[in-house]
Image (cartoon, rainbow, N blue to C red; front, side, top):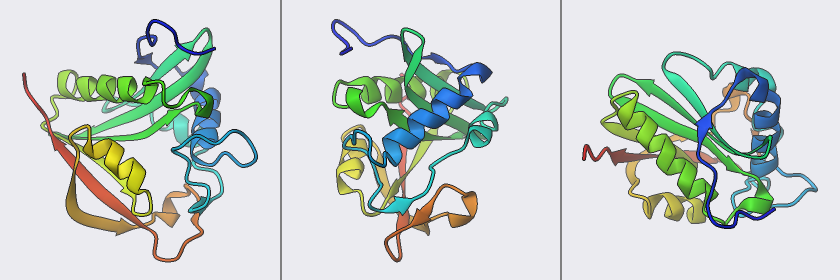
Length: 179
């Protein structure tokens, strides 16, 4: 079903959502033979993006997972983790069949609001694969800027294996508007 009048409000994920979140993230990032949205990275990284155990570990005092549901199904998610005045936003995923409907933009705004209001963030950080210029442009249109810093792909984080040699992760930041 396509979202008609509006997009459902983002809400905090519950432990019962872990399996759906892991499935959604893997489908959005590494779809295999399924529907591929514009955000997938299957040609750059192989293997699962996340496991249910990794999702479960994201629930904590300084960490939140937000979801958008359609009926009882999680159709989008994002993770916010805070360390001092800095919050990192990641794992933004939308069901490939619902991409380009504004769900991701809506959820990103909810994550930024949560970072400001709940965690008092002054800076938002995000990471984007160096080979994803369209995704980089998407975040730049939303106020994120390249910092000039990058890191090698985090193979030891167990989030897949780079298919392309020398794949890097770019660091983006956005100053929080306190208004």
